[in-house]
Image (tube, one colour):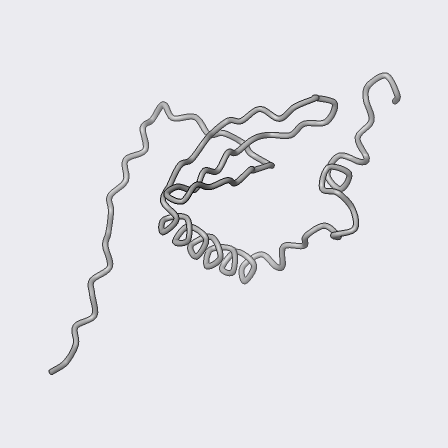
Length: 107
Protein backbone atom coordinates (compact mmCIF):
# COMPACT_ATOMS: atom_id res chain seq x y z
CA UNK A 1 0.00 0.00 0.00
CA UNK A 2 1.32 3.42 -0.92
CA UNK A 3 1.42 6.05 1.81
CA UNK A 4 -0.20 9.32 0.84
CA UNK A 5 1.68 12.49 1.54
CA UNK A 6 -0.37 14.83 3.73
CA UNK A 7 -1.63 17.88 1.88
CA UNK A 8 -0.09 21.13 3.01
CA UNK A 9 -2.47 23.42 4.82
CA UNK A 10 -3.20 26.64 2.99
CA UNK A 11 -4.53 29.45 5.10
CA UNK A 12 -6.06 32.50 3.50
CA UNK A 13 -4.92 35.60 5.33
CA UNK A 14 -6.70 38.89 5.48
CA UNK A 15 -4.61 41.96 6.23
CA UNK A 16 -6.80 44.85 7.36
CA UNK A 17 -6.21 47.94 5.20
CA UNK A 18 -5.71 50.11 8.28
CA UNK A 19 -3.04 47.94 9.91
CA UNK A 20 0.19 49.77 10.62
CA UNK A 21 3.65 48.26 10.39
CA UNK A 22 5.84 48.38 13.48
CA UNK A 23 9.61 48.70 13.00
CA UNK A 24 11.79 46.64 15.31
CA UNK A 25 15.57 46.37 15.63
CA UNK A 26 15.57 44.64 19.02
CA UNK A 27 13.74 41.68 20.53
CA UNK A 28 13.56 40.10 23.97
CA UNK A 29 12.49 36.47 24.12
CA UNK A 30 11.25 34.79 27.29
CA UNK A 31 9.23 31.68 28.03
CA UNK A 32 7.15 29.70 30.46
CA UNK A 33 6.58 25.94 30.21
CA UNK A 34 3.53 26.60 28.00
CA UNK A 35 4.36 29.81 26.08
CA UNK A 36 7.09 31.68 24.28
CA UNK A 37 6.87 35.48 24.49
CA UNK A 38 8.66 37.73 22.00
CA UNK A 39 8.72 41.46 22.68
CA UNK A 40 9.71 43.50 19.62
CA UNK A 41 11.13 46.94 20.34
CA UNK A 42 12.99 49.77 18.70
CA UNK A 43 16.28 50.96 20.17
CA UNK A 44 17.23 54.49 19.17
CA UNK A 45 20.39 56.41 19.99
CA UNK A 46 20.24 58.90 22.87
CA UNK A 47 17.02 57.44 24.24
CA UNK A 48 17.26 55.83 27.68
CA UNK A 49 14.91 52.93 26.97
CA UNK A 50 13.49 50.86 24.16
CA UNK A 51 9.73 50.93 23.71
CA UNK A 52 8.00 47.63 22.97
CA UNK A 53 5.92 48.01 19.82
CA UNK A 54 4.53 44.47 19.62
CA UNK A 55 4.30 41.44 21.86
CA UNK A 56 3.77 38.00 20.39
CA UNK A 57 2.72 35.13 22.66
CA UNK A 58 2.81 31.67 21.07
CA UNK A 59 3.27 28.02 21.91
CA UNK A 60 6.72 26.40 21.95
CA UNK A 61 5.71 24.30 18.93
CA UNK A 62 4.68 27.38 16.95
CA UNK A 63 7.87 29.18 18.03
CA UNK A 64 9.93 26.29 16.67
CA UNK A 65 7.94 26.35 13.41
CA UNK A 66 8.57 30.12 13.21
CA UNK A 67 12.30 29.48 13.71
CA UNK A 68 12.24 26.97 10.84
CA UNK A 69 10.30 29.36 8.57
CA UNK A 70 12.71 32.24 9.35
CA UNK A 71 15.71 30.00 8.60
CA UNK A 72 14.26 28.89 5.25
CA UNK A 73 13.32 32.44 4.25
CA UNK A 74 16.71 33.90 5.24
CA UNK A 75 18.45 31.18 3.20
CA UNK A 76 16.34 32.22 0.19
CA UNK A 77 17.11 35.88 0.89
CA UNK A 78 20.85 35.22 0.96
CA UNK A 79 20.66 33.20 -2.25
CA UNK A 80 19.03 36.19 -3.95
CA UNK A 81 20.82 39.13 -2.30
CA UNK A 82 24.03 37.75 -0.76
CA UNK A 83 25.20 36.83 2.72
CA UNK A 84 23.86 38.77 5.68
CA UNK A 85 26.92 39.78 7.70
CA UNK A 86 26.62 39.81 11.48
CA UNK A 87 28.60 42.18 13.72
CA UNK A 88 31.72 40.88 15.46
CA UNK A 89 30.98 39.17 18.76
CA UNK A 90 33.67 41.22 20.51
CA UNK A 91 31.66 44.43 20.31
CA UNK A 92 28.22 45.09 21.70
CA UNK A 93 25.41 45.53 19.18
CA UNK A 94 24.59 49.07 20.33
CA UNK A 95 28.12 50.22 19.49
CA UNK A 96 27.99 48.40 16.16
CA UNK A 97 24.75 50.10 15.15
CA UNK A 98 24.98 53.47 16.89
CA UNK A 99 28.69 54.01 17.60
CA UNK A 100 29.10 56.50 14.75
CA UNK A 101 26.10 58.60 15.67
CA UNK A 102 26.81 61.74 17.64
CA UNK A 103 24.31 63.80 19.59
CA UNK A 104 23.39 67.09 17.84
CA UNK A 105 25.32 69.15 20.43
CA UNK A 106 28.57 67.27 19.62
CA UNK A 107 28.53 67.76 15.85
